[in-house]
Amino acid sequence: MPHPATISIIIPTLNEGATLGHTLERLPWGPTLEVIVADGGSTDETCAIAEGWGAQVVVATGGRGAQLNQGAAVAQGEIVLFLHADTQLPPNFEPLVRQTLAQPGVVAGAFDLAIDGPGWGLRWVEWGVKWRSRWLHLPYGDQALFLTADRFHRMGGFAKLPIMEDFDLVQRLNRQGRLAMVPVPVLTSSRRWQRLGVWRTTLANQVMVAGYGLGLDVQNLAHWYRRLG
Image 1 (cartoon, rainbow, N blue to C red):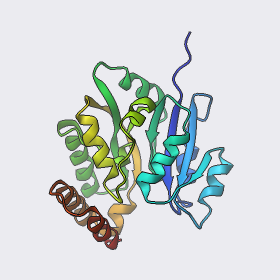
Image 2: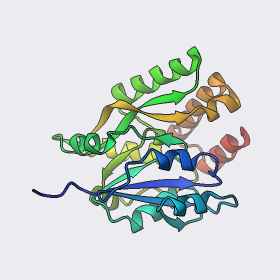
Image 3: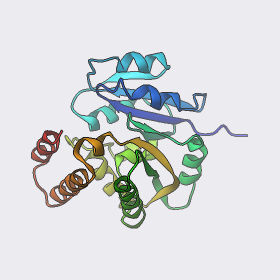
């Protein structure tokens, strides 16, 4: 019987020592899984934690898109999966990824989103993400985007953008075929919504999407978004 395709999980990090260990602990380490931590210059224990778990660490500067591209450049798997450091994959994600990509016309996939925190506001966000992903075909980077390594490299990887690199990739993928949603959620930290509040975070995200769609300067958008904290 043929061996299952190797999945390369690529995790961009920058001072994620408080979250990375929990994410790596949940992974089913084995011969069909490769884990690459693409670090942007952490000054905490992020890289030591990654190496302690057996992940390959590569260092890249220039923002998250550049980190993800550097991680993908050294990946050996037939499938690449881009995972945020504060997001945990479901235990059975490997067969789900392979089954999704095997569907006719599917060029990439992503997972539903669950947010690790209480409150109706976060449940509203989860519902909105599910609606956006299924009807608009626009999952974001925190939903563990995945596709074959061959397709990723033929597309030229992530664009050289200071922000919105995941949105740009998804738009390009939608022009090539169907982006399928896995009806099982990844679990992401609620820290972004806690920091700004649910409504301010949601509004900020929509402003970014609208500004990008209107062709506003991406550097200015990135500067504004990061000033929010």
